[in-house]
Image (cartoon, rainbow, N blue to C red; front, side, top):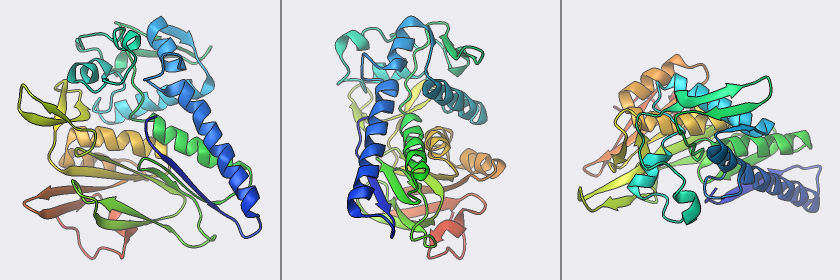
Length: 307
């Protein structure tokens, strides 16, 4: 999916060779899933669906689209996998094969996630009104979860999987948590660290995957606000979501960036087992805000919320 994947595994009972074989198996599994979900692969299953508009799909693709619709509903449409025409218009598909790029509609026309119809009785997905899906805002998180499940099923509990910042932290030495840094927006530094065990974390920031809009004279991000049909402008900010699965953390991080800090915190407080850390960098200072309960994951623990 256009990013690196790092797998860390440990077990006092297993040899290095056995652990390496398990990690390699998880990577191979990720490649299989990438072939289903990649928006840049003309032969991927999601693009077969995009072109056919109705297709009986694999259990994995059906499950992923189902979860995407759930997050869309929870965010009031701020997370939306049908924004491909906007990404095309803004120039974020520059490396996409031309025959695939030309098939994506040139206009958005208000087509949103409600134009994805699921038929559980035969695992069919139907796209109406010429909708086109881009799963990049949720697929990496889903693949991380599946890799973690692959390893746990084979008896490896001490795991950490990182797919370009979408991270699942399993056990570590059976007791200790993993430490995950939150990047200072716009720099390579770390603004704070999280201590996590058997949880997932994903960060969405407006400082990555940037294009310069010559017409507007501004730097724009790959994060689309479906309410305005426009890409967010770069403002050196990020939202980090902590959740039980990386699928949910990944998708919520994207949607919460689009909706803004205040609404994101309200949403996080309404969702069981979801916590966020919002970072905004202005005038050389970091302004950090937390949803209820998020401070307990910060290492060392935060005494008070900075907002």
